[in-house]
Length: 128
Image (cartoon, rainbow, N blue to C red; front, side, top):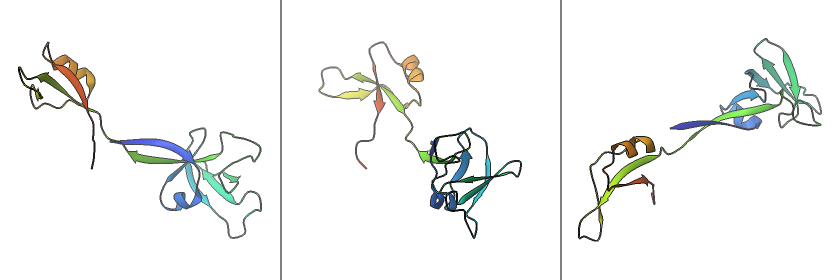
């Protein structure tokens, strides 16, 4: 499962393939570093209308504070899915046994399917 999040702009990460967006959510067509960059605003972004905007080396549109035109990076990160199982204590034994081999992808489904005396557990990865 992948989650998308916004992080601060980094030109090297952008060149490596991260997608740039403006802080206000608008799409950025491209970000370039001109051959002769401006001293304080070396980055130039092109928006969906073909208009250019200048930015500091860390993607700020205005050095004095955050604006909707600051550059951010949209990155995807892998996240482990949450999985659940229903378990019932084995009678007279020291351990647990699963009611069935069904692994549920959400808590609601696991709870709806459990037997009256079962306990629903979230599966966790302990060690690789």
